[in-house]
Image (cartoon, rainbow, N blue to C red; front, side, top):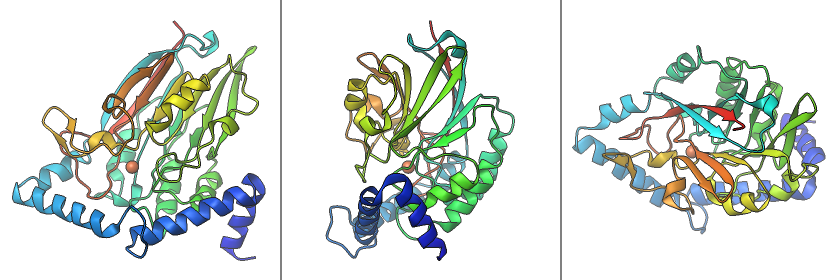
Length: 316
Ligand SMILES: [Fe+2]
């Protein structure tokens, strides 16, 4: 059995033939569309023009170097969130969230990101998707670079990941070989005393649309404290309907290239603008959309520095 056959057999055993077949079919369609071979809604031709226009615009305004520097100017965001359902045993829990790493796109190869993580203290780490720079093509370089990064992240409760719209399902074995489970419509729980905290993760809602919260929350008691990892904020209504307490996501990059004051020009999210960066809430549910650590399209940020987020959870 070849390497790819082995990966596919393992994934089919875990998620079922139908789910794997649908994911792979969409990946092929998406890759064909993005490489200009398909007739879908997203055309690489258009995206290429957009990123080229962005590069030219930055060069003409003399902003290229500044934007490149800003893309590595990681801000540590410390966010405290109160969840009434959080068991007292988990009061003070610190969660490191890294989103939209796009690790093979860093102009410095990812050195500064690793440096920025070195002295941080946290109990749990979550990765909310988009590890690859491009949305198609080879994923091996991304897998190898993520493996190296994951080896530098250590915390008591472990690291958990989900997939974003830049990720192929074939990336999963890289994470899991490094001891990082990828939650693909699945959940885990952590017990302290008589109580538990649930962490669920769904497949990418933005492009692939294979998110299944109901499946992810199988065997999760509705009244328990539930943290959901989803790549984009776009399924907030559904998550609220499933009694999710805390929704962690990214995808929007906070706009990446923003007007002064951080106002995004484009958000790439089918949700209210207020949900495209930072903390937000919907009914009883708290949410947080990270600006991300990496970039897509061009390795440039303007008025929107990359972030490394440390969430502290409180029960009152
Ligand atoms: Fe992204």
